[in-house]
Image (cartoon, rainbow, N blue to C red; front, side, top):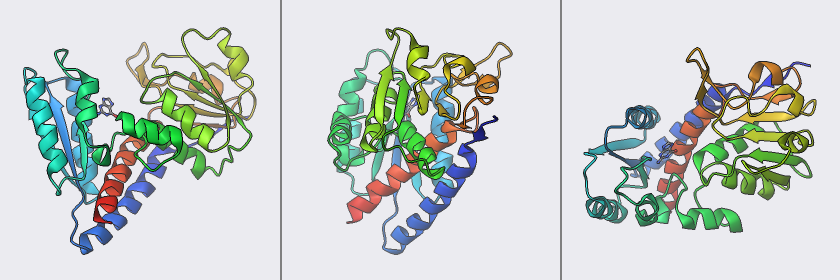
Length: 283
Ligand code: GUN
């Protein structure tokens, strides 16, 4: 069996087109959806990510402003700036790029963002809304994974989903989203004994560890859906995920490639959240 690919680029493109349409409708009502992105310091990866976020936004008709600050910006100054953006009715989404310089308390910074503008979905109020099934913003990466499952018409009810990884921004929210769709969810992590025994039971596996070859073909039930959230480099310096793609695709029913899988979906869901924030603000 050779798995079907879940094409994140193609789905993200369709989602961006939908966002562009809804953005036009909002603009016709006099509302320009706007995202404020804050970058502190000069981390090269963060510079690339934030540039992508600005370009994605402007290409879909959203307004995005990138504010860059030196690495020695004080935490108090950053909190002041976030509070000003919270109070600005022309700004609908606020994103503070992580990681922050070490002298800053990232939790404190995130908790300063108004939950109504928390388009990253990292605020405790957003996490609480996800836990309790209330409206709120979902973190973009697991949200994008859910969209991929929806797109292939996969019914999660009663299925066994195994999430590998328990981070606040992927593993934990991923497990909650799968649970909300009535899957039976197992969360595996670094202290899990016999990972393979769990993954072999899984109808859906989401690998979100940040390490190559966490999931190999012998660990996958034939026909399972495999979603690879990883972003690593192999020995040749080529981008690869957490999943041994070439091996797993011989066993799985569906698999997401890296690159071109979850990555573009994460980017697309930020646009969805920003538009949603503007739509909610507009009433
Ligand atoms: N750094 C790496 N990924 C992300 C993300 O999705 N949001 C923010 N704010 N920072 C990040």
